[in-house]
Image (cartoon, rainbow, N blue to C red; front, side, top):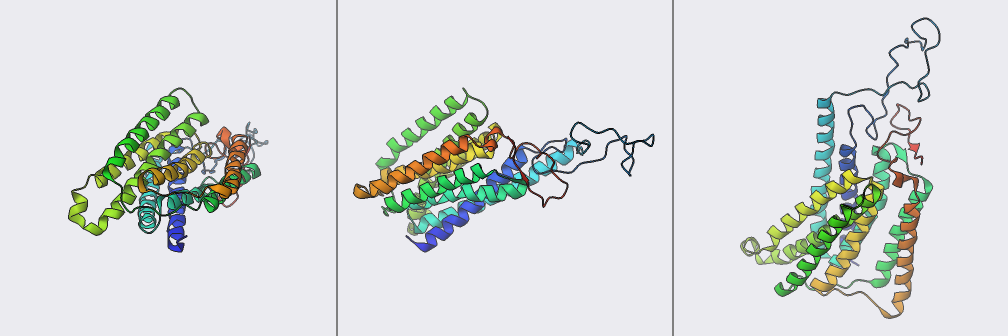
Length: 339
């Protein structure tokens, strides 16, 4: 495996994770100060600076343990904070796209995209800082099983490098299949709500992101022919359109549920779809025969991680959607999630 490809793909995964967390942070920002990661509180109106009530006696305790109401922000302040988080996430996403393109220019689609599965671990690490929560042990173990399972599968499969560009006729059936699959997933998402909807929409955006990566690899393959040849080709424009569609569907996934619900389907769906597209478009192959045994073990770890994640308290939506119970004003104190 090309070391440069691996390094570029890992940096792209980190940037993509930061983009996901920041955009989810923007989606959860509220006017009552209850946005995930905001732990500022104010004294009760009937409480004196020394903690006593106005009559001299002890101040009435609030239902939340006496912490008092959360500080309220004006609608304008909320919009500003949302815009800042969203723009920061968009900038990280753009940086991730540049790093991804560089990795695809020197490596295969079947290697680069699955490496982006490490985004899961980066998401947990960055999300724990932004949302000021420490994910439960089952969440960490589940994500670890997902990442290790994918690593074992790729190590055994050893995706081979294929063609730099695709024969024009191959794009038609593959494009039709991708569009039909995405439309089917969008239709299913309309029938469910909550975490399942976020997962289905995340899978739909994963398929589009994988298709975008395939088109981007085609663009990098055409680049040596010159800018004139590239500008006259349809792939750069299709890359932009598909990427925007994937981005839009990703926003819908973020609004439908938590990161923990959408991120596994998004990241793993992207990886597995990319392996299929690498085979169908660029002639990349994976090893079979005796290597199917460790490949099966990797798939088993993926399944175990998925089952464990479905039982995680984070799927209930409390990790990145609600204030942590007993959260202190000090942003450095991470709180464990609660079911």
